[in-house]
Length: 223
Image (cartoon, rainbow, N blue to C red; front, side):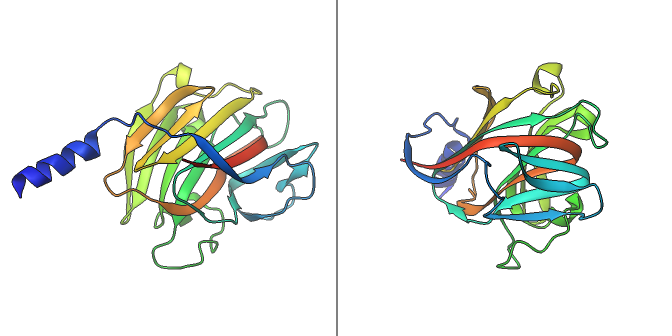
């Protein structure tokens, strides 16, 4: 029994090296038309805007906001997109919170979409979360939420892993055979073999008090 437990622990800690190959395209959006297929959670006050504009998804808000893809995802998958934090005189411009939720689910409610957009509203769901340039661009952190815990899996504090304004970042998020990772411009920021992997749930763009634009969302099954 002890040997079996040790073997299981070794597998859980093993590095993730295989990320499969792109298979079926299950979702794509170039944000060139009306915004459809998403659930928006944010304070709908004057001046706050989430919409498709000029061929990009715009999140221009003075507080917390999440744009959920309303299609549940499962299995091995790859999420890719382009994203920018706009800084240039807008009233909500702030270089911060280029954030992401994925494989999110509410263990107490089959309907995930019951929240206001406040960050603390999401504390009780199961998911993976990266806050890139959080805390007014002081930290980049990867957390695994579950069982009421928000465990920090990895963290960067150096300038190379923080945000630059008005830069298009190419993001890839993968989930494959118990592992998950995030690449930014082809560089691996986080990789994690989860001993209790999240294998289904929802994907969401997340921010707080900023103006950001997103384009070319593609989601593939991995094989």
